[in-house]
Amino acid sequence: MKFIIQRDQLVQSVQDVMKAVSSRTTIPILTGIKIVANSEGVTLTGSDSDISIESFIPVEEDGNEIVEIQQSGSVVLQARFFSEIVKKLPMDIVEIEVGNQHSTMIRSGKAEFSLNGLDAEEYPHLPQIEEENMFKIPTDLLKAMIRQTVFAVSTSETRPILTGVNWKLENSELICIATDSHRLALRKAAINTESQSLYNVVIPGKSLSELSKILDDTSDLVEIVITENQVLFKAKNLLFFSRLLDGNYPDTSRLIPSESKTNMTINSKEFLQAIDRASLLAKEARNNVVKLSTITDGMIEISSNSPEIGKVSEEIQSSEIQGEELKISFSAKYVMDALKALEGTEIIINFTGAMRPFVIRTTQDDSMLQLILPVRTY
Image 1 (cartoon, one colour):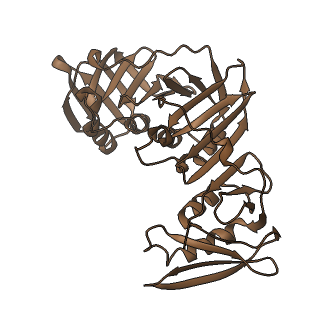
Image 2 (image 1 turned 90 degrees about the vertical axis):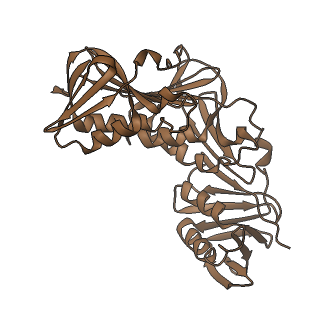
Image 3 (image 1 turned 30 degrees about the vertical axis):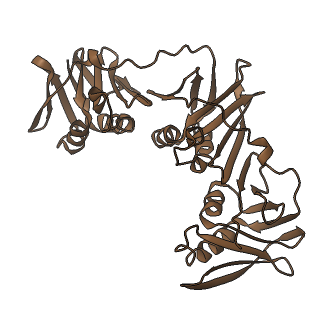
């Protein structure tokens, strides 16, 4: 194998596939990056057997030559060293050549590295996915849907299914739900699908976070193919595979209250900043609790009290409050995460009592919802 390639393209592809390479793997060859060169271009692959990422660098794009292939071939190189080397090479052009026993020469300007490679035949094959059932979604919408839900997945392995995001596709609507049993994030969007397939799968939160980092902010369509145990995201020159989580996701629809006793409309940024300030003194307490109580004339008091540190209270004006008076305590972090995920200046919060979950939505948009369980404070 021998080819000459533009360094910045190589660096970008290496960084993308590195997101799937794990240093802790039971299969030693997976600590490497697989490189395959043929007449069409160079393909890099990284995998930790949960996530696999394939990045393709075409020979030319928009009339510019990116790669010159002098000899086809393949090799697996140690990811940690290869990625560091490529980043620090002196010139814009890199030459890579594989010699005997997979020994690989990497040249740029006057710098020359020799890395011991491995046989690419021994690298596990990526799953072959039948692509008859697929749907497409604009990249920026996909990234938004991930950002607005993935933070709410559970980080605890006691219920592994909750470490993923539940994706349901029915009636041309995609619904993404994440919960760690203390809070829930939901986002839905209309999707154009050719097939009338119904899906109900759970994608690991870690996979979605990594995917979101790799995708560019464009409105180009990403193709999504779902099978029994894999999901494949296909973007331009990029394939991203992830395994799906086994098991049934809990039915979360009954968690979302249908009626409410107290409703308030409030400026999102003011509310977020007041909670942020109140949480300054709540950080020491193990659960970072902030209290909210309604007072007269549409005013809301946000307060926090840590006996050994001190206390804080602040009043903010809501644009509207309806219903019963309310005193409720909640995790400042959970509410701040939820507010950051919602888009829009005004939010509506629906409460159904001090011990029941409350729902935060934006005024303009019913495609997003954040639900949070209060904290008991006696």
